[in-house]
Image 1 (cartoon, rainbow, N blue to C red):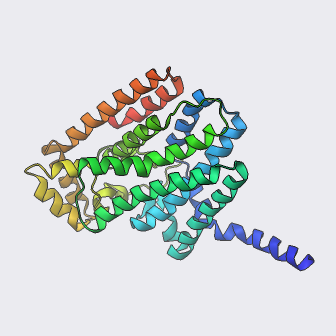
Image 2 (image 1 turned 120 degrees about the vertical axis):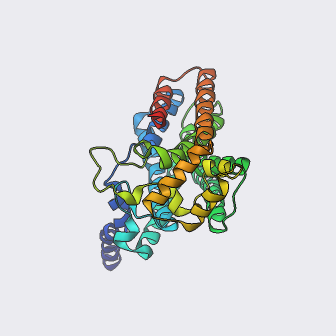
Length: 312
């Protein structure tokens, strides 16, 4: 028995080393817009601070673990202004850490509530479907339709919001279905994020705060173009005279700053970025209208105010 306890203690001590890529990424906090959204939903849900923090922290673990994976999939050089974790710790350990954290979350949720693990499986699986669609289009160089993109965004981003929301509602007397609002927020959030990657990087959620900023370099400029990502502005541009040039640049997955600047200029010339701005305005209005319909929520309105930083 003593040997077993010693082995267990040794394994737990080693946990710090094998989770190093995860804790490394935690050092830079980002803007925590997702956490603010969760806090805003609690205006309706009325969970205790302790229970809310427990759920928010758990969902944030999923988010960070996903970032570790995403950065490998996207060959990302920088995350939150510092070298991506896999560049520091290597791909094998970073992949393992990501999976490790996701299963730590499962263990937490099994202990949290009898229905929590099923919610996690359902919502995260749909988020993975969205991520998979995004990757499929990129790797096969297939431009999706606007409708396909919108569905992907609601899955990839919206389902991370509904995950936290549904977990919170397990402990709330407020049973009005807030998932449609969460999915709309996810769509708004993803389109905004893609737009900011091209035009307003400082407004990105994952962009480091002034206090945390360390080594933001040209490697961060318009990363989505280097990845070959079909964002909404790219999809719109395919129906314009500038579309062929944009597509040729996207195909190259270039790191050339001047070429990426030229591509952004083409997206402006084509009206594609203006189109995305109009979509963002519509989503901002409709989301605020839904919040008002639900009785109003000063915290959610403050989050929406902050999300309008894409206009700056």
